[in-house]
Image (cartoon, rainbow, N blue to C red):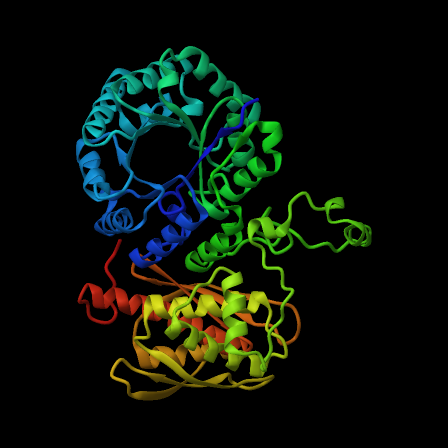
Length: 519
């Protein structure tokens, strides 16, 4: 079998953002897009330009700044959507309009309330309009795996004739199984006369846990583009996990007869960045990027690994960018050692950034005997969060009194936007609640805490604790994260991170405290 290229289409910024609880700013989307550029994905679906002014702005910014990958915007088969998509991506080095419409009977009746011929006409019209703007047009018949196969043939053929250069076959609700999905791709190749004029793409959801297997099954039958998200993000149970698809192709490429253009060494860094920005943790046993993906607890496994890595590892951890942890830094380590290790981990900092990182590193090294790669990744995440959101209010001091039979009491000192120090105190049901009450008395932004989670960054009693919270203001959700060896301080940092995001949104829309624009 010849070694064909499978294009990797990343939709983390569009379908991934549709995961419940995720809301990305333009700057956050740009940071992820630039990392996807380093990962060397072939296509970045930057958003759905017609869905909101914020999404239009994000797609436009990414189209102007990110070079290398194709930049796509999603559009319904509506003239206004197609026009908005083009306006957003027209400055891209390689623009693509991706238009879609429902094709299954259940969607036609319950969503569109139109007959099949009307829908077919809308699809053709949208593809023709998109092709009038750019040569790269993708068409998706939504819910294709539950669509009448003869109607699917007609729709795909007509849209290729109208100018579609990629036809995507989505398993929109994750209904299909690998054998069925492979058969559908095979039938499309055999029964659509002009299919050779377009690339076949697949977009699989994970409702039954089959998204990655379905994608690989489609590749075996001739699909040459796979769509998915980093860490398997997406609607409901998510999309195909791109790192799983990429490393399946990389590891089994000789059998599959295909390869990708991806720089696999950027996978771990990309996964960590997406997890950090979205606040969605990666489960420890997650394939490729989970904390346990290359750990061996069983005595038999450990014995085998000592004798030879390939006894129980089919991939080299470094091939996906996993930190080797061979170099451990401490309080006597210098600036050059820190810079060297950060560069090995994929962080390239200017002088001012390295100054800030070194100061934070020294502070951490005074509290921890050894600073590991995982600590450094967490440290850089904290620095990135401060740069992205800014410090409208900054945390200076936290002091807590609590214990059995005591009323938890917290005193906090913040610096306000004018540079003034403000101190207040509060009580609560526990130390974290008391800290949040004290902060609320100073900042005065009404909100509801909807999620609070603590994770250990490393092992040991001196481990960094990483706290993730979500707060709701009206219908908007803001994610906050903070790390520290003291869980109470980490909790305070996370809360301040979330509140500063809410305050930044208020400032952008010139709103008084207590109001955040609804999405």
